[in-house]
Image (cartoon, rainbow, N blue to C red):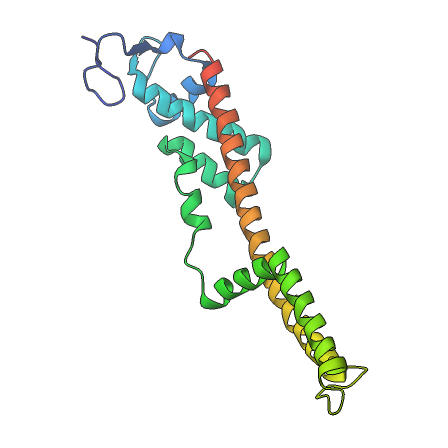
Length: 198
């Protein structure tokens, strides 16, 4: 049974890789950490995969220069061999504040046919009540100044509430886009890693 030159542990059958078969860039990276490693030395497949991921990280850093936080997340996921898609739903479903819940409900109701029909019915009822039913003493005679005030107040309140909801939706979309970018970058790098021969 062969022994790894790095960990000094025995390597399982079929999982030993000789230094001669390792790609030059990865070989140099191993030698930088373990100077005694030679072309005749052996390494386990798990250790080689670890150095492949490190090599990939150094390639990306050389190509892009200083990595952005989003790229560092991807590099960390590659080095840890972790899955990025596990925590996206947790990020999107963060606990909403009362104001955010109210804004979402108002925005969803304000953009529905239920709101349009009920509000149109309210307007017709208001006008009919003040024109025909209360002809002697209407509480809001024509030109319906009180109704105009109510409509202006409703518009003044509804617009910022809908904008708050849209801003939150935009934040969600931005997080999803960042997450998609991370997954695509990780997939591209993993494919590149797989396509390389040792």
